[in-house]
Image (tube, rainbow, N blue to C red; front, top):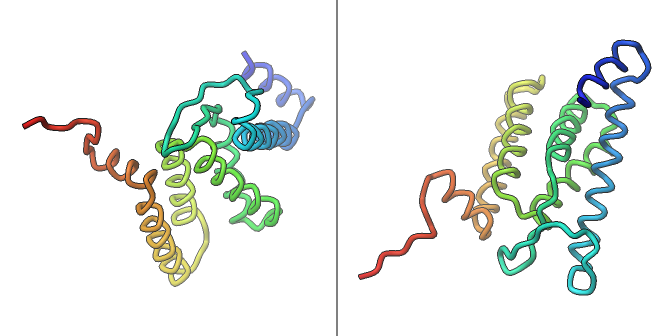
Length: 169
């Protein structure tokens, strides 16, 4: 339903794409601020009433990340085009931290980072030597992530290793 409403508004020039993106960014920034606040204050007060679980010895919060991933990819696209670089860089770091620290979501994080990686390698006009440097830095980042518990879980999922089964002798 929202698609049709937005389509009609865009078609009739009642709203612009920029205005839609501003609303989505505002929503995402509010979600991140509320999420970080709940993460910090969870031991004292639970004001979000969202699903939680324990992961890696801390609480994991199940916030919706559809718009977060969409704006992460869009911000990265704008950043590579040189548009509003400071805001987009801070926003990208903020969303990555939110995924890792608050949500601790493995597959969503991997999907978002992989998409950003593909955009950088294939859809930007970057010289070959910069792409090689980026690939080396990405490998260093992946090795660093793989040393964490979250990174090891992601690696097990990608390789298809079932870590929940144990053999009884």
